[in-house]
Amino acid sequence: MNLNDLIPVNELCNLYEVKTSFIDSLNDYGLIKITTIERRAFVEKEKISDIEKIIRLHDELGVNLEGIDVICNLLNRIDKLQNELITYRNKLDLYE
Image (cartoon, rainbow, N blue to C red; front, side, top):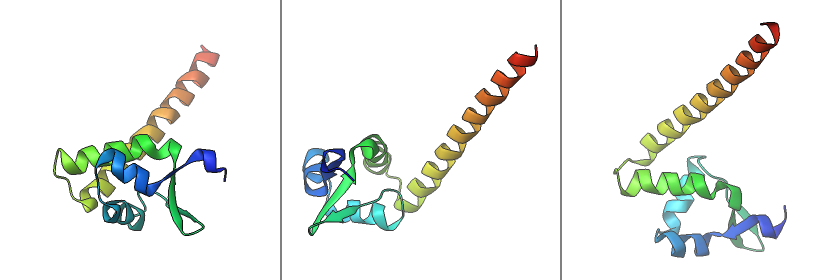
């Protein structure tokens, strides 16, 4: 993994004003993946939007980690189903 694709957890915490323990909890629940390089924790830059969404759910709506896990799983399933629907519509358009 390229270091340019990663952001340090401490910078992320400072930017979004969250505790490092919160990010660690997200990692423990499997909501994000923390990569450790030379005893420094990093997350992938492409996951920043997911982390922002999780922080909003937690801070603004007061959703606990278990609820966030459920919401994220449901949103992922919806995305998958929407992609399948697009695929089937495209196939159907070929036959019409």
